[in-house]
Image (cartoon, rainbow, N blue to C red; front, top):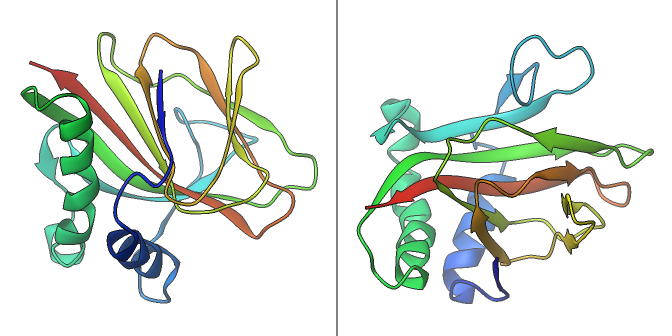
Length: 170
């Protein structure tokens, strides 16, 4: 696992934060987190890249340049190896007074995961070994998809906003 605070330059973080927290970002309600049906959990999300292709080109074309800085940084931190980006999406979990843990189980085997936090609050990532990574602005956490983890919702802010990327080293 690798953790990077101040992962991208402040000016680029500000662009991402403004885009994702602004009034015009196209968030989509999803009534599940891992797989349908999910009677307990939901989120708002926007899939930017799926199966290595840009999704919703009409909406996302304005945001690709903003996200590109983060994706380039992940590639740089992986020592500029060739990589195939399977999926990249912006996700928002709403405030929950109970601070629930939501296990994530939908990643491909032998891939890498990057979680980049936009929000700063008491939510974050809880790993199976009980290590907790708190949501802090401009923090990037990179790890192997074999590591089991859950998202912990926040209780001290309106939402937990992050970008998740799943990629394979080639």
